[in-house]
Image (cartoon, rainbow over all chains, first blue to last red; front, top):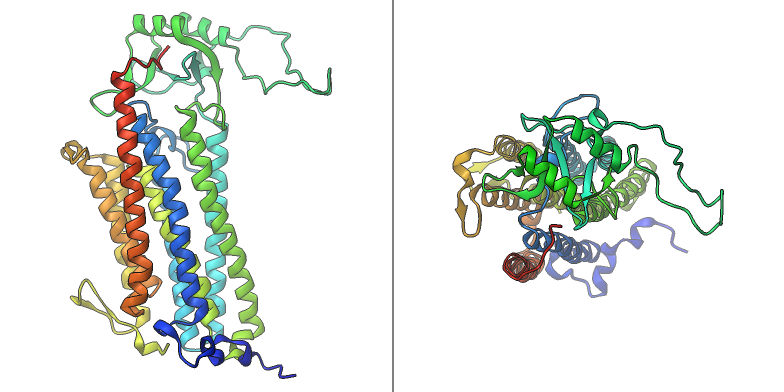
Length: 325
Length: 127
């Protein structure tokens, strides 16, 4: 049996006919076609996001109000962290293309170095995204939901957000979360919020300088802030429950759909990144083991590189449509 | 593909690089500048760019155009689409661009229509 790896590459089979259509190897061309179809999947998600956004144009959350956190630093810094994530992904794209370039020169040491840096960049991006998700899920200030499903935020006279814990009046309560281990095994309830709705209302009534910011965007591009008397009326007539953090059912930042799209689109992208990191690791070890050296071609690095660049490409669009526009 | 087979000029030939590696760093610098512009505009949101142009804020159009510019350079230079045959390039790019443009047009048109119905059609959501 002929065991040389070189014979298993597409080079010698030449698509079976001795020539390569479009001067691209079978694997590379199929990677391009896969990426074209995958871009349609992503654009399906992003276009659906655009659909919902146009549909709820006046009540959609403003991204700058939502993604304002930077790890280890307190305060309000919209855009900074996500710009960092974008830069990490572009950087790892660069190390990937440098690996491809080193592969063309059959330079094994450099290919391994750049593949290693690419994998590292992938991990940094994934951990950043995990942090972003956990911050988003945990929530920040807390809010009140209305019967109609809208969200009411609390602000001070200067328009700055006020957290529920800063004004809600805690009352001693015997209420504990009902879990299925304590009673009928098939009934349980969701986690209780840190304040009951009545405590928040009592705190709101006792603090005359707290106002309500509605779900609706005004002419100036900011969410409308009500006067004190309107705020009291809004809370009395519409308020229903306390909302803390975000999940698939409710979302303290605004429309639940916003959280659903966030989890779905960035999650699907993060899944692609994870797969990319996995492929890069496999290729990295193949490079170390000398597989491509023996095969006489580093084209496999190039094919996986195409996928990795595509992940970067998608992020560029996610960045624009989720955080900028 | 031999290393010297790369096309080394960008910006329609106004900027030529000596080697493929140099071109990679050049494109990185360009992409970083574009991202920095986007972030700065996103943070400061200049009042001048808040006017409506073709149904959207001028600023949003700038973001979308800059994104497409970035996508072009990632595809053409990092993914080496510049070096592929025109027929392969058209097969991949035109198909995707046509289908995406079609989908986006249909969905945004419909979304805008439903928004109009909500706003004028006696549907109460705020209670």
